[in-house]
Each structure stands twice: as structure tokens, then as C-alpha cells.
Image (cartoon, rainbow, N blue to C red; front, side, top):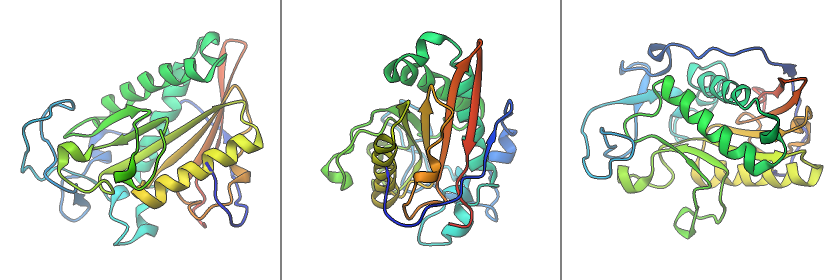
Length: 246
């Protein structure tokens, strides 16, 4: 997934063991610091298709509409974006069996389960928000691709536009070549542009090269890259976070 502009700085560092912030710091309920989700979002279990709720449940400003203030929305210090980043790192560390690092498919399945667990523990799998693996995007979305993992509220449940209630997208590659990374950066950009995803992660498996320095797209403030490698029974992680100056 990539795009075509200037090269962005990476600010890489090796990550430590993350801790998710308390739920009260991630999801707000005060009108002054939250915005309502779009549509009549289901207020029942995450797989319940039927009942709609009028409860004014809100996620934080990290998922605000592009029509307001995107610079504020994508501030990487914001607790929601930090929660997603911490959940991603904790999930990677949960994939600690050598076999899962041998194939992209094997890692993908285990990582998906671990991210689901982390988001659940943070209280983010709620009010219709779900994590899905290889969710088909079709002509009604304006794009044709199968993103590896997405965190969203399906429009079938919310009644909102396909461009609303999209929270995060993950793209995975094992030992990504330059061509692999650029292709995934392009796909991430497509998700940002067509479906207004505010947060994207590129994950390079069995490598310590994030490839983030090769991102040349228009959404540098939304793309973080992380590389993960198992060595001597320990998961090593290197981050290149979204560029706040993009």
C-alpha cells in the first residue's frame, strides 16, 4: 500500500511492553470531548444484527469527521490512537510461537485473535464496533480490495454511509520487499481516501525493517509501520510512527 509524494521521516524506536490506558481515558461520554458515531449504531452485542439503539454512545475525537479538523483528529498523542497502537504491540507480543512467523497466513490468524482480545479488554469492541479479517470492499465502497484487518462498524448495522464509522486498518506482509511495501502503502492510502480511515498500520513480519521511510503518500499522519521478529524466543519490535508534521 503506497502513494506518490515526498519521503517522510520515521522516528523509529524499539518498543517496550505496552499498557492499554483505562477505558475512561479512551472513550469519553462528555459532549465537550466526544462526537457521536454516525447512524443509528447498534447498542447490543457486536454480532447482533437487529436492534438499533438511540443511546448517545461516542468514541473520542480521534475518529472525528474529516469535515471538521483532521489535524486534531490524527494527533498521535491522542488516547484513542495510542490505545490502537498499544493494542497492536501487545497483540504482536502475544504471537510468540516460531511457527506463526514462518508464514504471513499463520501470523495473520493469530495476530487477528490477539488484537481482538486487546480491543475487547480496552472496551472498544462495543456498540456495533467489530474487528474483521479480509473484509471484502466492493463497488459500493468505491474500491475493490480485501484489507487484512479492519476495525469498524459495518454500515449494514448502523445505517450510516460506508465512509463513516471506520476506525483502523492493518496491512501485513512477511519480509516485505520494497515493491511489497509500496503496494500495501498504496492500498492503505486508498482506504484513507475512499473510506476515511483515520489510522493505518503496516506490519512487516519476521523482519526489523519497518519500510516506513519509503512511504511517499499524502497521509503520513495516519500511517504507522511496525516490524516484528522472533529471536531467541523473544519478540523484537521496531516502530516508525505516523508523522505529525505530514
